[in-house]
Image 1: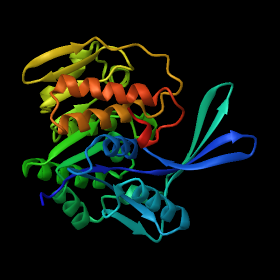
Image 2: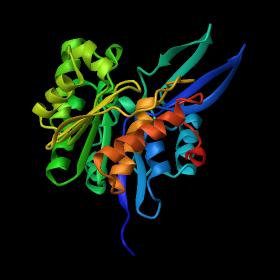
Image 3: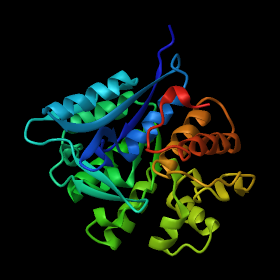
Image 4: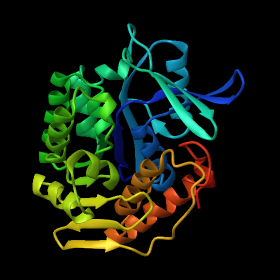
Amino acid sequence: MVKKKLFLSAGECMIEMSSLGGSEFHLGFAGDTLNTAWYARACLPVQDWDVSYFTRIGTDSFSAKMRDFLNRNGIGTDYIEEDAQRQAGLYLIEVENGERHFTYWRNQSAARLLAVNQPLLAKAFSDADIIYFSAITLAILCPEQRAVFISHLRDAARSGKTVVFDTNIRPRLWENHDILRETIMQAAAVAQIVLPSFDDEAAMFGDRSLEDCAARYRAAGAQVVVVKNGGGTMLIADDSGMRQITDIEPLIPVDTTGAGDSFNGGFLAALLSGKDIEGAVKAGHAVASQVVMQRGALMPMGQLV
């Protein structure tokens, strides 16, 4: 029997309380790197690929529910460590006049210590064939643990692992903009594939075009850069040069939550399944196009076409 390959996503999964109106809420689980793991699991062939999540959770009942949720949906939890002193982070979604408002309780979440156990971190990266993380993964860590995490990613890349980085810029999570920019560029330097979103990049780095954004990450060392653009024209940059993907059907989304994350999962699954990069970008867009037409980040896996 041929050993399956492993797609490992690393970051923070949170408890989500979504308003149903009045005082009623729906309990769920979400987070940018979990969302990508979800769609990678939905799109990767089960006979060839395992998908696992790397994080840290508590020993409370809600953390146990989170672990069970992942396992029930085919996302492995072997690399999730429990912390008896902390719990999973939580956020609450309320809707007012059609707009979603978020309130977070994550300052003491267990995931903020996800890089503390270096032997587990090293084993997870060693077992994986592809390692996916985001700037949010780094933002929740203290500076020392960010350096540890990036160092282990660098070692993994040198040993032949494919490292994929979504720059997912959330300024409120960082100490200041200079540290945000510096850390993102350090992380991009150890990744073979970088997946930025142009509007965020333009605001934080001053990029004037998709090409400027891609060139900056190529100069940092990325082999492949796919610049996402809010459902508009995207850009691919690799050793063959830069080219735009323009034949993208415009949509009026119902809910853009998880759009970029689902693109990433669909794109990476297609790339790992043998599609060329242009075909993989279109496959990622096809997944995201379905996700934004329903509410919430996690579309039932069985409903994806």
